[in-house]
Image (cartoon, rainbow, N blue to C red):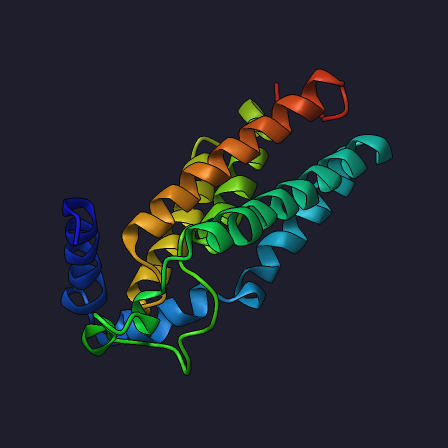
Length: 192
């Protein structure tokens, strides 16, 4: 193993095994599920419709859809299929050391985490669009939400920390790029 793989596994072992407790075991598998966050997504839709003109609300919602589509496609199709890193729970060298906290490991590859990429892309896009119109705690809450989802991927045993770290960076980049693209064209509501 290269030094960075050893470090990645050491951090994975600490999060997946060392931090194990009944509260995390009950909550974190739920946190990574799409339906768990449905109220947040519904709130964003309602917020856009309530506060912006029809065209600006539509642009905001299309931007959200685009960041999810771009981050998911980039992570799942372009990166994972080329890097082909096994998930920790599927890797024959380490699977026996993994505390899998899901009914099944899942198929597919591990690098980069699409959950991390998608949620950091959404958080970045929303924070960039809404800007100073957000309460001071809202950016922290949005990035905290994305971090919690990324962290849960490691805790339940389906991703290494490096997978979620680089997935998060990918999502942040896609969120910023999408914001700049839409904003330069004047499509988005102003956050000022």
